[in-house]
Length: 256
Ligand code: A2H
Image (tube, rainbow, N blue to C red):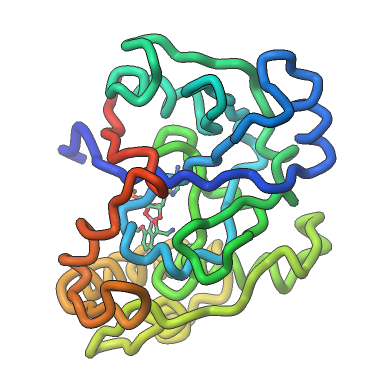
């Protein structure tokens, strides 16, 4: 695609409650103290939308790792993301991946994380099959107001919770205006999903179109309508929102 390295912002979403399966696996690991902070680290290109996070998506078929960042803190991400981070000063020793254990994505579903920037403080971990292991950290934070992919998946999971073996009330459908655009109003993702007649996450072609349009419109014409940067443009808010307490770091996703 001509892009050798993509810069993402990885967020720090502290786990506040584990699913039963994850709890068992983590309790049996001697390298992780009971008092440790473990953060899930979803990667995003749209940090200015983070006030609208509703859920955290994991792939049920990816095996994630847990990596030791300090005596008290651990990050959960793919091995590939950790290898990238190891060469960008995010872990204590340069070039060393401090892995303490593996954990299956399917076992993480139903856990709860704290989304520091979001209106919905504590959000559930739910499944998304289309997450790629070869991108970002393999974790995606759901912002259904501004991401057509996230909106389509949210509606699908809410409609078919039993099929996906989740509780319906884990799926947050409280969609909040974060960014206003002259063309598509203040909840661009639901608007474009309707306009392109997208009925499920399987409508890949239309979703790709909606995603590109949402991204460009938001980036060039979007204005913040929520949070401390209300009234500022998306381009201004993008840089202002980066804070060390909520973001792991900007990191480059590179090809090895
Ligand atoms: B974005 P690009 Cl509000 N697999 O964050 C699939 N998708 C992934 C991923 C992975 N491993 N890692 C990250 N992503 C998603 C927010 C957002 C995003 C909004 C609107 C659009 C949007 C909230 N989800 O992305 O292939 C993440 O979702 C559309 C461009 O590098 C990340 O940013 O272009 C985006 O895809 C990165 O995709």
